[in-house]
Structure formats: structure tokens, C-alpha cells
Image 1 (tube, rainbow, N blue to C red):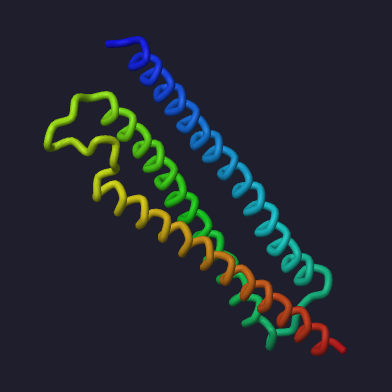
Image 2: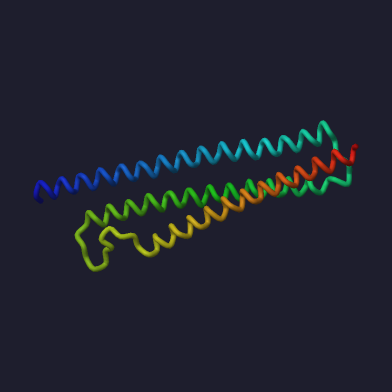
Length: 163
């Protein structure tokens, strides 16, 4: 092995480690941010609805918007949790992808190897996990917004009922 080949190998390995570390740091930060946001939004909205019930009270005819709101907020929470699971798996697929790319670069090519290219199975897994994460993210946002609107309907309906 010549000196330039060894330098190329060392450079590739260094780049591999940097990219892998970047994905892992991104994964950790994304999970922290999502957890903080989830806890803050869900706690605030649920706390607000409990405050309305406790201090303002409610009439019996306005219970359905509150119940629907709590169900939608709960579904939003479940959707966010499922998104976190899919996101975790997507990050791990990315780490596996760069691992596979590096390992293939380091082996002697044969007809069965991919020469640094991702396998079709890995590409499909990454696409599926990304789509699944997006679906759960968007559905959690929609469910959360509708849940908040139902909470607003409850609050307005309750205020006009008592007026």
C-alpha cells in the first residue's frame, strides 16, 4: 500500500467518523427538542382545560367538546410518540448506511458487493421510515390543532352558557 493510498484511507475514515458523529448528535438533539416541545404543549393545553373546568365550571351540554378535545390531544400525544420511534429508527438507518458505505469502501470489490452504494433494502427502509416519521409528525400537528380548537369551542360555549 502506498503512502497516498494510506492517506486516502485515513481521510475517508476520518470523514466517516465525522459524519457518523454528526448524525448521532443530530439524533440526540432532535429527541431532546421534541421531548421538551411535547411536554410543554401537551401540559399547557391539558392544564388550561383543567383550569377552565375547575375555576369556571361547565354546563352539562358543553361536555362533548371537552371530551373530544382530550381525546384528540391524547391521540396527538400518541402520534408524537410513534413519530419519535420512527425517527429513532430512521436515524439508526442513516448510521447503518454510512457504516455500510465505509465498510464497502474498505473491502476488496467482488460482484456481490455494492462498492460504497446503499443496498436497495436499506434505501427502501430509509424512505419508509422518513415517510412514517413525516406522517406521524403531520398527523400529530393536525390532531393537536383540532384538539385546541375543540378546547376553544368548549371555552366559548361554556362562557356563553353561563352568561
